Length: 183
Image (tube, rainbow, N blue to C red):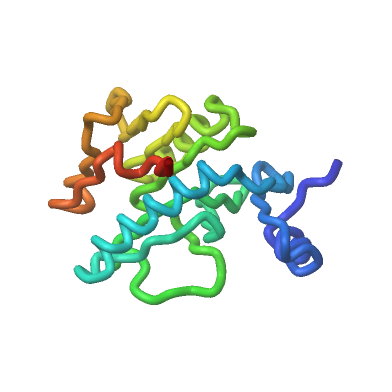
């Protein structure tokens, strides 16, 4: 099996624009659509982040289709479900993959995701320079918060996620991200 490159990924994306793909260790990973609940949770996180970041001109909020070209030996291209990049690190938009890791990233577990693989993905981002990674699990209604050289913190419905090192004053009430139920 040959090792694939970013050029191969780009060519495949042209041939199959309806598919979301990542390049991981020289292999193309086709991402299947997520369930509605996990995507709605990710959309809520993106909305709440964007509503705080944009008026303050703090940086960029990226949704799940935005690719990051990682500064690792394999040149992986990965896409978190939600991400934040400080303005000084990416002052202008790019139509290409961002050649950096986000400062803050979220992964939202969908029905088909493996918690261990999502944790590994977050750890890789942290090792490459992401300051905060958050694993969101709608089924258990928890958020696992990862920072370099720190123990993970698990938040539940009664908790509030804060990221003062990146977004002073921003608060995300855990209970507010879950998909609402209508009677």
